[in-house]
Length: 309
Length: 309
Image (cartoon, each protein chain N blue to C red):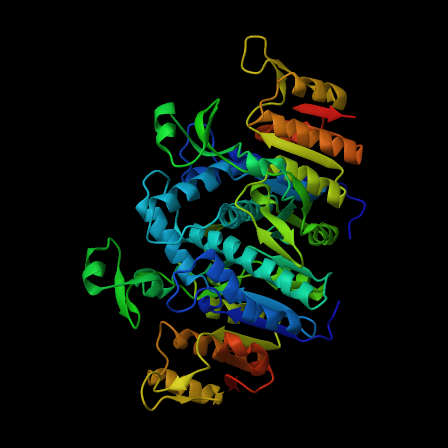
């Protein structure tokens, strides 16, 4: 037991594996993981660590592949999310194994586990698919696709149902694991979405936002620090314009106001801000949104956007 | 800690999810899991339980799908194995959750974890791909395929490299988990094959036989019982002929002799017998090969082929 060590939950964005402009070969994905995972390896010697991760491009690729192919049965989205948990969990775990050995740590226990997350079948998203996943298309291509798409800053993308996370089914297991000195990799892609049906769980054809699921897990295991690592340096006002202004500190109150003013787009920075607000309010501790290059600096208060109560 | 409870390792064959004649829709796979998982739910109240599982049809489907589709990068076999661990791990875990609730157990901890398995890069299989995976083709279809195939009892099937398992990377984690009362689902599809490269692991484009990997894990965690659950009632002499003779008890010595005489085909019963022999010799305890319908009876000595020293 290491109850003395603070619990650090790090949510890795999709760009930890696939950078802008890359198609996402397996070599690229492993290479990209080194920068965040080297930092996490060092941090794990000081904190109890939980790692969560996105899966947007990976689940998008699996969807494309099964749509190309009539020789195998099509699987619902929650099964594809489960598949990406296997893939990305393995990639993070094996990279972390290597980076721990590189700093002389040979006995750290690590587990990458399948996570499913309960959602509410009354969630309004079931009648309004709006979460973009997979590759971007031109307007002309998008019009021919057999599923709903939406215009995003990257182009037209497929949109799917994305309900809010209610509870992480494996929360007790995850807490028991970090309390016995495991590093835990979990909640991949926001978790496999399930609804309760009496005495059982049933998967639903949807995805859960990984930052919102991570905030829920951080609340449920009592995390002390919540880091959302992504492909920008933090949250900014007037993002992408000549007046862009990176925010170093952001109160929950200001975060809410800027969110309402539309500074944080719903497909990208919006859910990160929402997740940070949820964590700060529930735990009364700080969250930080930062670049995957500067996780350590962000924890030290030297980088990223610190969200405080 | 429950050091008093024996450790039971159950290796579920691919037919626990997809039966003969089925194409493997997700509904079929969940429905099929009920029979073995109901038994395992009850057994988990008496034993510390580890569940491993096959992935032949599932990994074959992922291969087919990625070969159909040029829009997404192709991934090596070890990544597809990782994806099936996510998929099947989720399906087993959520079915087990339900079946435990059905018998009034609400607090059992379960974890389904990603497992990788070290293989030896000098293993002879690297120059002789011979493990069948995926669907069966006619001889005419097989001749047109861009990869090696082999004639099997089901038809012509793709063959891939399948080295012997050397060690399960997560063995310490798995032992720690069962010792703290977790049910552990692991080593899916025989584990993700990796070779050691200095201070790191590198995945290889191969699959590991799940029964041999299960036997290795049973040895490494000190299992007391090893159950190989499959689609036949046990090992038989003259299988498939009019002289077919199911073996109720089989010594290691006889098992070796029958194996050499060709009673147990290399693609199906052969590795199960090899795995049982390895376990019995290493642990000096009995293994059983049985139908997924009769796991409980097989443990009670009333069904299956008992392999003894």
